[in-house]
Image (tube, rainbow, N blue to C red; front, side):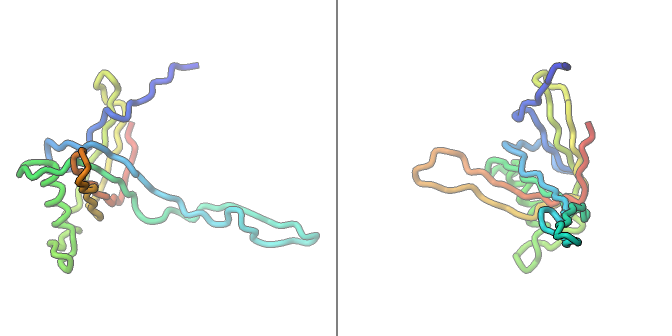
Length: 161
């Protein structure tokens, strides 16, 4: 049996076109879901009362989504600031954004590294934009840093290695 070489979840880098030197604490929630017809529902009954069931793929629903989390910072060159500026460009004008989501779509990638720092896996994102923004809890008894989580919607995501 070949040796199993698992990839540590802590060795990764996330990048987006035109936004350099960024740091993220978490990348997750990647989701793309197949639409399924049939499942366990009976489709019809035949002579003798035999129930026919069949599962079929009906394509895919929606777009890829991915969550990226960074620490909140007021520094002008921080990941926090760059991500919020991108989010604001994509927000509708009715919500006090710039309403430029179509022209603000970006490509990017998620890269996973082994314990020696060698790239072992890469996912490429195309036509991505931030579609949701969430601020972590503020708590008078808290001792954690404030996190910001952005949900990115991607029109295409492919695993390359």
